[in-house]
Image (cartoon, rainbow over all chains, first blue to last red; front, top):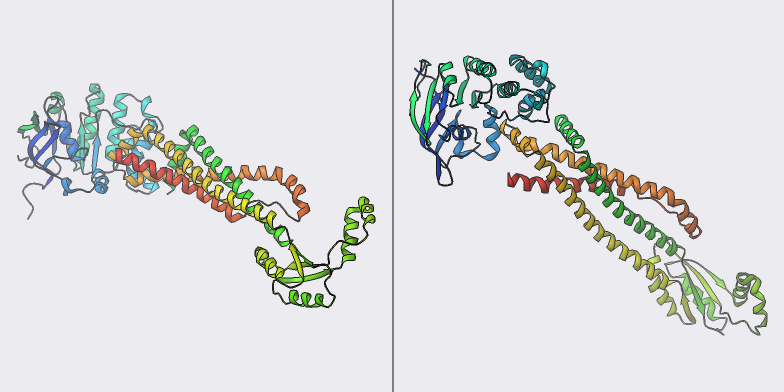
Length: 236
Length: 291
């Protein structure tokens, strides 16, 4: 018999993260099912970025448990962090592209790091660059691209490894409305193919543009979960 | 591996200046250590050549009764270290001296009697050159032998000098290897700090520490290899230009000036690579610990 809801792919149980004495996240518990589309919202300093960083082990929780795709991050050995990150696609507000490497090389890096054979890398990178509409700029260096183009490359890099979860931190924060639409369209298509998406944003317009659950943080506390028409639970 | 090699070469191209300085430093260390080795090897050869050419002169007591000489000769012939010996009579010794003095031989005409002693010229077997001192002492014990002479002080001093230079060579090897490791470590450290952000991005997209480190190790090994080759190549060029003069100077001693054997050349290049690897290891360890 099939379970009523997809199992949780991300679980947080009473997670606290402090910067000095300041609590960036305070005893946050939640479950995000596989194939959910979730916005994490709240004012600046609410803990949105911290929450995302805890999921890819950019930071470690001071207290509580973080489980991502079956991996308990609190107990994760430093050498296993790359394994976790290869299951994730991460999009940053500031793109985090390597300025001295071409568009192709930036995207290929993910597959190279995963030990993918050379031919498969070429096929995978060319395919994803076509998807994001950057195949003609494959040899360009990131500084020569517009913000929208750089973010599309960042999306391509996040998607090329066929991750199970996509984490996006203010992915449209510095883009014009057209570029933002293109980037959100790419993220939505990833979700429609079965991927789980977490987007941290304070852009209400963006939140209303996609049917998704919304986790509202304030002062490091989870204050509200707004359900939507998407299937699956989202429990505190 | 091909990917890592490509990345290493790319890094070397992007950091040409730093790379050139590192290669030059390693090359300099190889040149200095190699030059010392070259000197010590050839000085050792020269010493051996002289040792091999050594002959003992066994001078007999003046006025020795003729029947005593066969016994001395018999004792000498029974010594296993002696290859051959030749008796030199007083007359033969005088004739030899006259021929050596050539134009000044007339000075000897004023002598009323021949002052030169009878002697045996003794040639030792190959391999016992280093035991000359003890052999000479034993021969001096034979009744009727006045004195045994050979260039022992000279050989001893030169041998001591070669040994001292060998020790200095070892010390310099350690010193310059340490300096080269320090330089490579700093070069790699500068590259690492220059690429800090890039390495962080690599980690974020799932690159393992091994994936990040391997190109640096390859780069350091290549720097060591190139430094080794440049150093040995430069040393060889200097050798080629000076070997002719050295051979002309020392050829009269039956000695030929030679370059480092191929095993030493391979050892120098390998050592340079190890130096590169150690430098990389040191800087990566520090960088990883601080990141």
